[in-house]
Length: 272
Image 1 (cartoon, rainbow, N blue to C red):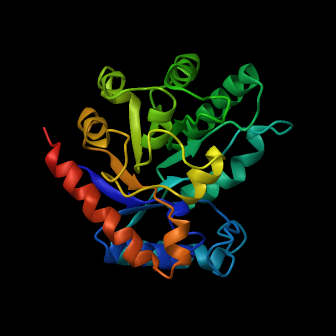
Image 2: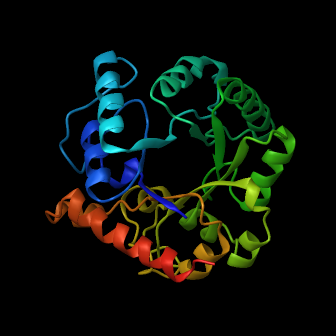
């Protein structure tokens, strides 16, 4: 049975303890988080740093234990031009302290060959830490479609290195439900679920991705067929930032509550 989580970008900087409590109140069992807050320009939440604040880490561990919520995905261990992924060993150790058993990566380096090699290094690091690693494809990035992401997995060739399926990115990159159904389910580690128009209505892909996605089932991605093609014993984590709704005064509980209900319906309707 699928577990439902809430992705950090849906919340525009809501601090991590508040995010855990929101997830628990909505009946979710996971959240994603980076180690630091990022200014969204949408909500005026206080900044936080799980990297620099040991007391906050202790509070997070306590509230997660109390509320039955885990960090289902650690974010921020990304390949970047001019840096070495080994420099993020300290961040990986902090995620491990927080009980994180899965971290995600993307490449922000346009050099595909170097990205492949950096992914391999990170995969070795996470294997030693006992942490699953996922790779996320996105059309604006160097790993921009499903064939390239699969090539990365073949290059690294470690069983704990898996695909993260972001439903918007995968469909917009050209993949179909049939393509997903043809994958070995063991390659799929995590799902970020949202909906969107088939053709972008916002000129900047990254702006749309970070600020305006749609409630699952209300867009044009063919989400029912996509969800039916995915293994249901994974985290289906809601990545639905809605800047327009937030600026109209709708709080995170109202925005995300609708997404949780819609995701539960889709999962129930597509259960094998």
